[in-house]
Amino acid sequence: MSSLTDFIPLLPWIMLGVSAGMLVGAVPGLTGAMVIALVVPLTFSMDEASALALLVSLYTGSVSGGLISATLLKIPGTPAAMITLLDAHPMTEAGRPGRALGLGIGASFIGGILSGIALLFLAGPLAEWSVKLSKFDLFALTAMAMVFIISVAEPGRSGLGKGLISGALGCLAALPGAHPATGDIRYTFGTAEMNDGFNLLPVLIGLFALSQAFVDLAIPGPEKSKSVAAKVDRVRVKLKDWAAQAGNLLRSSVIGTFVGILPGIGANIGSTIAYGVARHSSKNPEKFGKGSEEGLVASESANNATVGGALIPLIALGIPGSVVDAILLGAFILHGLQPGPLLFQNHPGTVYSLITAYLISNIVMVVLMLSSARWIARLAGINRQRLAPCILVCSVVGAYCISNRMFDVWVMVAFGLLGILLQKRRIPMAPFVIGFVLTPIAEKNLSGGLMKSGGSYLPLFQSPFSLACLVLAVVLLVFSLRNAKSPKAI
Image (cartoon, rainbow, N blue to C red; front, side, top):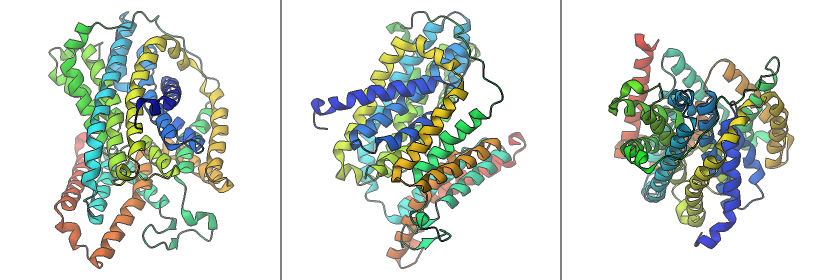
């Protein structure tokens, strides 16, 4: 986009995306991953700039929306809002819901803007640098990313084991179809529709949307709606209060951005780390968990900053940092774009329109949340069983419209049942998605490197970058195994 005039047509899509994302984030049980997976197929007829602006705005809005129900109803609308709840709801119980919302909304905005600035200045140079990487370098980087998602599983033997199982299942699901390097057809069991493997979007819709709809329909008896626990007073916060939180805001936003860049971490981990650092740095650590403004600001600025941070490796390297980024990767591919080193060279206008849309979406978010927070909070009492049929219909339509074939619908149903099984066994789905997305990339780069080296693996260990990535991956895996065996982790 060369001028502001060119960007104006994207504003309605940004406003729609932020609004819808906020509503989804405010309703417990609905996630940004679910709604984005449902919306991606609907963007097929849109131009890529409008489609990506809509999706990244949904991303921004869904992360921010969880603040409202966490503050007023003690219900975290999103996993990242769980840390926010620790101090936001005690402030509501103390008669300060407006101040809690004001601090949370402002911190979300500042965290999002700072990470957007990092995205603007870091994604380009990172892409230019990544062009110089060899096939073996890219394989080692991808391998490290796959190990990273397993290493951040919940502590203990069961957590690590479940992460390994989930990641392995994702890798297996990526194998059917044509070999990414040789083109040989494998593991299709004679089914012609599987020659191209499983389409990413039906897999994601099944795992996140269809499985949740099935679970909601299976809930015995209607859920009782909950009323807003407190009336929202004034949500504006004075400038001097923000000045007192300046160091906390900057530190937490930097932590959130950095955590977002790391593959497989997510906003909930970013907010947890920032919250812990803020508590150790505070002069009043005893107030944390009892209505601390420092804790609230740290959590909200960090979890929004992870959004911009996660977009950096997605755009520059083609590596998704979270489940939502994996879905966005599918959206890029759907519109004929391949995130990675050449994206800036081949489609610079689209890249910068995406970055601009992310920055503008944070501005739209703060305006909408300040003006409508008390009304959005009422959505937390919606009966999810009534939403489930709508989600089912949208899931089927979305899966079918991708390639206009029933095979994708059956794939969605199969992975929806798998999603239910994973939820029942408390197996995380993030490793599955990252494994499913990154396996073809790793396989393609490894095969390309071997063909260039005449079948020798030696260059993989001769390159300083690939060697560093492999060593870090091994260290992460060993560290995770060691923690899993320790008595404290059991």
